[in-house]
Length: 126
Image (tube, rainbow, N blue to C red; front, side, top):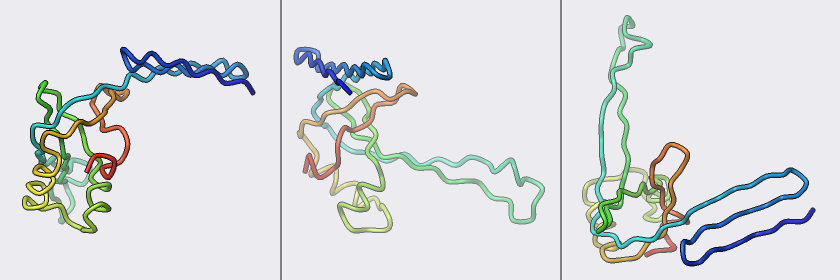
């Protein structure tokens, strides 16, 4: 199987070509400097079991690195737990992470949903 990888460093654009499967993948990797880290917590009503006696809202969370250019880059929360060896992510932990990532350059990409995600693992940047 022949694979061709073309890299355009000026735009950090990667093109992968597989002749057997005729597959093309373009990944545009961006780079930005972290201003601070924040965590969003929101609740969504549990509509599927609304008539049940144990009805409650479902809690969702997401941790973002906010860059100086205004982009919000999602940080994998499992990666945060693994790096700090914790089971819970607290405000204090987010503050510590924000201090450690402040003014650090990170690479990120846009996923299929249009969200920005950190490229690599947290340990690559701290």
